[in-house]
Length: 477
Image: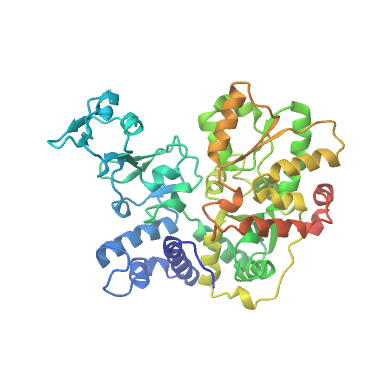
């Protein structure tokens, strides 16, 4: 059986599985109010102060599993009722304060927020504090600590703030939908919307009409997930769910690497376009650098476009580790090609909702891409693939890549580019640390993920990028 990193992930899975199970049976609407009771059947709470609050929160999780708030364009949402256990945060004086005579903290504070009691122990007036941290930096005992909420710490673009009711609030103008807050929140109070019902409807329609094919496009990071079974069994499980065929998004990566090699040699400088959270980051924080973003669609959209051009009327579901892909498919440039996105967490729930035990299934083969397309899943893979694309096409261009592992490194590189100080001609931007193998929608985030992807890539060493992109449609579809 699949093991999850946290109990929060397991809870999310249970809700998704039950919602999917009811949808398959056609009983979701009539049993909607009973789902929280099915998940928490007794009168003893398992996670909260009382069973009634627990079920109220579960009801909100069910809504997210059904697509969430349609009025909120963001794919990431906060369950307000679940977000009340964290302290407000900010700078606080700890018991390490010795009541010294120097009072450096008071001198450093420009807002008059520091006062002292009869024992000379410092106190911070929250109504005056501006969270500048000056007091903390000068304290000789390190007695003033910044207690940030986990979601605030995880969000490197500072899109999360605290609301009046102590709940987390997401600024949609700043959020890049990377999902770091989703994976980090210890209470599961921040979650991404699920489109699992849309996928079930597509599969039902495909079975009923027997004409409309539904393709699954799987991200290469799938090779590091579902560790309790073989990859070929996962692929067979997808076929058993009703997908016509499973195609590697890594084939799209080969296509992108081939084209980006040409584009880079022509323009002289590019940033990658494969990570949708990274592209969103540039759009929102570095709009002046947008002309440098590769004009190629992401690997997901590229291979989906290829499939739809050769198989009219089909539907395409992308399955991967990324919450930001759910935002990407809302773009006008991508919407015509990808019909829905599932994370690996959601795929596990979908399989189990049909009681499909993949461990007993025979293996199907997945053989569309090259080594270089498959290693897009880990940090550094895109740059290596573009270098190979330059080599295979015989282009006279010297690649000088800047590999950015995580959004903080992306920020540094983009600032250097803006200032004219970047000593590189290609920025590989990955919002998640480690690359796609560190995505919020992964089942596991173990250290072996990179090795698993590398092994998966090496299984295709006999195929070049040129071989992959030159394969005729009938060999793929």
